[in-house]
Image 1: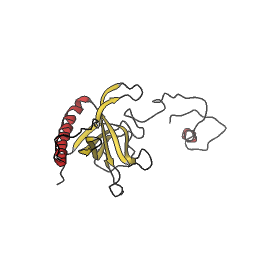
Image 2: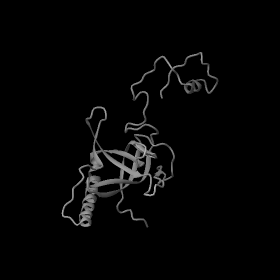
Image 3: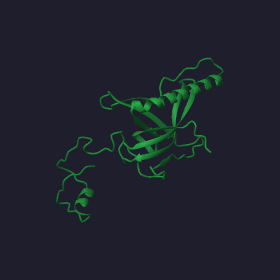
Image 4: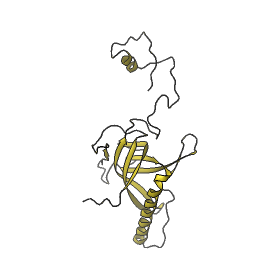
Length: 212
């Protein structure tokens, strides 16, 4: 039987998920699967209590390992109050930042378990706003320059409600969400084909615009 005693589950809405393919900020960076999980403060409270206990256990381990009475504590935690990206104001929700290295120490690719509500592997793109259950293992690390910190390492993700595409927690990006309205101008051929039932497009006849 696998030892899952250290695993915790975080149930919430996906924010800027990179679960289907790993993400690297720039070329040469270590690629990661990652997602921010948005949950309410009420649901966050018992999770934070368990994570703080895991951190203290890890801190004690590193004290013993280094043979010291005190070590610097990294100030940042992978959970924090969510801020609105536009206004900078608090939303009243909390964010838990989860990630998993997409390569092992030898540079070989690693996969992330990604399943649907029926526990079946899935390939659909998980977008912002999806309801997900993230299985994580708290990892307490020590770097002399930063101190003792904690990371939420993803083990697997179950998607309970899928929103495809998009990034933020409000769901997929649409014309309406960006404040766009129909205007005179360029019209995609795909929209014209859809309106015509897949028939021949008459390029001389303008069509109404469409959401994208």
